Image 1 (cartoon, one colour):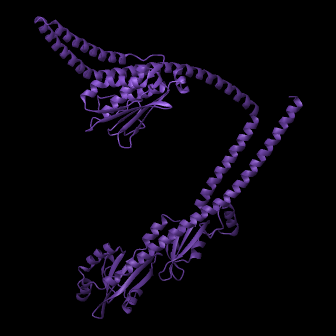
Image 2: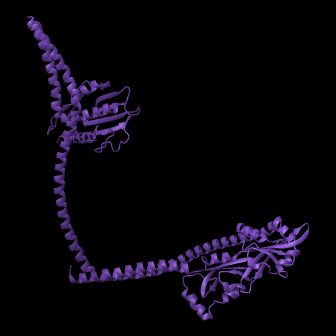
Image 3: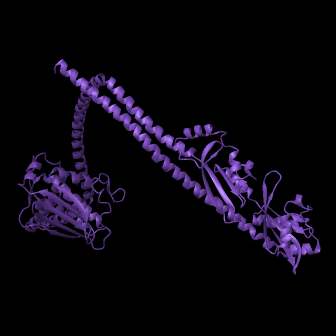
Amino acid sequence: MSEPAKKQQSLTVSWRVRVAIGLLMLLAVVTISISNKLLTHRFTESTRNRAELRIALYSGNLLSELRQNAIVPQLLARDPTLIGALQSADYSLSTQRLISFVEEIGAASLMLYDMDGRTVAATDRNRISSTHRSEAYFVDAIRSNATIFSVIRLDGGGYRFLYSRRIQDGGTTIGVIAVEVDLQKYERAWAGISDAVIVTDNQGEIILATAPRWRGLTEPEALALYTPQNAIERAIKATADWTALPPDAYLQGEAVMRLTNKIPFRGWRMTSYTTYASVRERVNGVLALEVMGFAILLALAFYFLSRRTAGRLAIFQRESAKLRALNQALQREIAERKRVQETLAVAEQTLEQSSKLAALGEMSAAVSHELNQPLAAMKTYLAGARLLLRRNRPDEALSSFGRIDDLIERMGAITRQLKSYARKGQEAFSPVDMGAALASSLSMMEPQLRQRQVQISRIVPDTPVTVMGDRMRIEQVMVNLLRNALDATKSERNPQVNIILSAGETATLTVRDNGPGIENLDALFEPFYTTKQPGDGVGLGLAISSGIVNDLGGRLTARNGQAGGAVFEMQLPIMGSDKNIEAAE
């Protein structure tokens, strides 16, 4: 490429980069503005909903406390002990009785007054003997036939809340019972959770508040204590509070959300003030992340612009070094895989031979029993032949020697089968008659079959079923399948093993038993998986058999029969098929 062309391409790239950076900045401004509006609205509504739920809960608790204590004077006015104390003027046990009531009721205090307004019993012993004759809650209770509720303002700015009711005996008023309601506990609880809460009476006067200085004031007067001094300061505050919606009020110079709720009791009203601090914090947190993200993107863009050429060269060098290292690693891995495959092939052959030797060891006891019977018969025939020769009867002695020869041939056949089974498999494949291999496998298993009464049914085609493979290894698989079938039927009263050899697209040998079946089909062909008792097997037979069948180009499968028991199928390509030719190769 010529030098002018390179300059033109560089200018084009630079122009495109500038446009991309401008679009990124525009996207940042738009995203932050939209995020601010959406998040502010969402978080404000969430905060408002929580505040509404909180004030409804506070109102319900306050009303429940008032109603719970409203019934107490009516009940205590009928207490016979208190009535008797007022009649007899014996108040020695009255205070203790009121104390026992206050623990159950949960009221702040209980007071009992006589007709002169004197406190004759009280849960707070310091109030005993005090006079309340001119108090409204005493006078109104004497005059009324109902329970009187009174709000008493204290000198320190707080309030007391009393329920009072007169006590009568036979239509004659003999005293007054008063119950003080503890509403200050809610003030303490609200102060630890909400920003600010007030309760006003029907005159708008604050009777409960999280801020003690507000008691006795109206709401505007209370808010005026902390409102910014002038409009300029308020405007500055509103400008700084750019993430909040228009405030409902100002509390301690800060914009707040004001919520009010009517309490269905004597015109009371509860008002809560929630600051926008949590809204600002959450919105500003998200916006800060967005700003940081765009700032990082811009920084990365400028960095890549300044380091574009050097970066590309460094990337090419690193990629070249990585490719060289990867090439070397692949070569080492290929060599290692070759060594592992060679070791694995030797290990598989060793395992196959070990499996056969293990089967031979298991069959040796039965074979020894088979050899003992001909040996015992040979001993008998030899003794008879010796006796016949002594009696000069050589013809009959020759007959005994013929029987002995037959027994020797039978013993040789047994040992030849074991010797052929113990040999290692061939390296090259050759035609194998599956029917003959099955007959040889059953012949090798004959001593074990004779030890147990197992019903063996065999279905074999009339024509030979020929495959390309290693006969010794095929017989090893057949012996493993037959041994597993015999072991599976040990607990059955009428053990049965069905053997079917069929020919189609493949030569299929099916071995079916009537045992308990297979519990875990997925792990059946895994090495060292076995359901036999310890000492009866190590779980390698089926794994080795599956590997042998795969090497021969076939497959070994297992399933549970519909009528119970396990079904194993060994499928091998029929001799002459393409799959068999590939396996032979």
